[in-house]
Amino acid sequence: MLLVVLEHDRGTLGEAGREALTFGRTLAAKMDVEMHAAVIGAGAPEAAGPDGIAAEAGNHGAARVYTVDGEVLSDFGPEAWGESIAQVTNLLGPSAVLTCGSERGNEVVAQAAVRLDAPMVANCTDITPPGGDGAEWSMTRVQWGGSLLEDATLSAAGPALLSCALHTVASSPVKPAPSATPPVQSIDVDLPPELARTVVKERVVLEAGVTLPTAPVVVGGGRGVGSAEGFAPLEELAELLGGRVGCSRAVTNNGWRPHSDQVGQTGTRIAPEIYIASGISGAIQHWVGAMGSKHILAVNIDPEANMVVKADWAVIGDLHQVIPAISAEIRRRWS
Amino acid sequence: MRILCCVKRVPAPGARINVTADGLAVDAAHLGFTTSPHEECGVEEAVQITERTGGEVTVLTLGPAEAAEQLRYAASVGAHHGVLIQTDGAAWDPERTAGALTSAIEALEESGGPFDLILFGNESADSGGFQVGVRVCYSLGRPIVNGIKGIEINGSTLRARREIDGGFEVYELAMPAALGVKEGINLPRYPTMRGRLASKKLAITTMEIDADAGGQALVRLHRPAETLSQTTILGHGPEAAPAVVDVLEELGVL
Ligand SMILES: Cc1cc2nc3c(=O)[nH]c(=O)nc-3n(C[C@H](O)[C@H](O)[C@H](O)COP(=O)(O)OP(=O)(O)OC[C@H]3O[C@@H](n4cnc5c(N)ncnc54)[C@H](O)[C@@H]3O)c2cc1C
Ligand SMILES: Nc1ncnc2c1ncn2[C@@H]1O[C@H](COP(=O)(O)O)[C@@H](O)[C@H]1O
Image 1 (cartoon, rainbow over the protein chains, first blue to last red):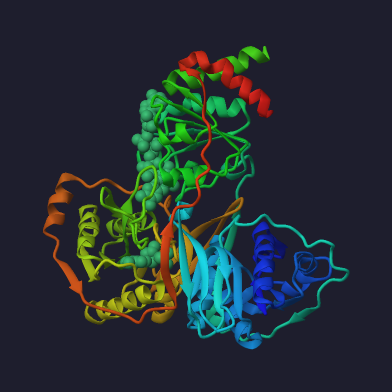
Image 2: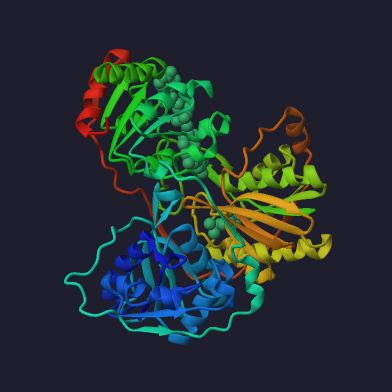
């Protein structure tokens, strides 16, 4: 059996959970086993109910759903989740455990792996189970935040602990939809109370709005902008387009913009309809954060810049002149 | 406070990453090296904490002899001690790395007393295994939370912030504890001339430690398929603005 641990937030299954199921379905078929799903945490049994996560898991291919609940699972806690996965794994004996390679997913599968004294392979994009001769697993995984791929092997005495890189597959339900909700079974685990030491204590909700990862337009600025003040025209254009300003690491390193605006490997991955990247050379670590954009327009004085070469459209010139001119042209057409 | 930071030396590639002919490493022939960014922020955080509360920062790295460069850099921005677990430079798998780091930390604590706080990066910049810190902490019996972008210290308790969709969550850990931090937690300072000079004199402790290989093995690195796009040059300078706005109209983002 392949066990998929579902990422959810207080009972709501997120896109990462659906992706893990979609990826897991293909893997389970290659392994020639059933895919089961586990829901860990506060209220898991209720959340898993027939209209909840269990139904959704079933629609995405899970043949069975397990729930785990307990005192110390009142909210997310990496150690308590990891210990739960380890115990469920010992009890059910899956051949592999899979999560989505989100921040939480990778963290809890690592916590489970060390408890099972098992290797773990993070952020796979393709996984081949061992052949009949009991050989090793082989997989492709991402390095450098997606700039590079690694072919790797995994030899594990017990279950293989795996995560699939975010957005490797688009989530999709099985067709035709299964006729019934999969059976739900609650599993008893024995969680030492001290695991509460890493459970979330408090949550703070910030004002919602257009965020960088979801903005329909991102106006990006790099070292070429030259200063914090230099971003005013980019702010203006972003506002006109209902978008957000993004930036490169050169900009955050100079203290011109907060890190929350940074696009790239160690920043945010964006996916706008269009990314207007100005004064950005397009280093690979920036590119991996920008490549999810549907279209890219580069503004750069250097026609050979990587960003220009990879863009759909480019304007060659000084961004300090080009960006304000675009805003002015928009206003002219609107008036 | 005694704080330990675990940092990794990684190449600093430019527009693209090239791989050596045998596919086993990044071709760093023409590249500089740097500290993995999350961990660079870990060092800055540790230095800021000890500037406020007193104490010492030790930086630990496992890598080739040249990784001393990253320890000296850390010293140039305020770290007090550097420890190198020297390898021949070949990539180690996450279990082996964690095993060696654990032994080193045990030895350092044996001689110098326990670390109140151990800082890891959320993930290393190159191999990104997302597990070394978790493994080390489990072996040491110490709590760890990853994804941390804010640390507050109240007596012997840490309050740590982690970003989530639409807000953040707070963890409270009693020290000794560990955290996996992310870039953005602070803005690392640049070394001063004085810092640079002082770092040249840093006495680096070198350890020879090995650990059992784990189950994950590298076969080959390769670049993902690149989708080459035909770039349409809309024009030069501000005169290109109308062509740009035509594109924006076409895309329906206006
Ligand atoms: C492990 C690691 C992780 C990293 N993570 C990230 C990350 O998450 N995000 C990120 O962005 N970087 C990241 N980097 C840094 C990255 O390698 C580059 O250093 C950085 O992206 C460069 O930023 P830039 O393009 O703004 O600056 P530069 O590379 O200096 O480029 C500036 C560009 O502006 C152009 N320009 C200059 N003046 C003008 C003008 N007046 N008008 C128009 N164009 C002009 C120049 O032609 C040039 O193309 C990371 C690096 C490492 C090693
Ligand atoms: N070779 C190393 N030397 C020192 N610390 C390391 C090394 N490899 C990993 N780490 C630490 O463990 C964290 C997680 O690494 P990883 O599991 O590779 O993503 C890193 O951010 C570092 O803090």
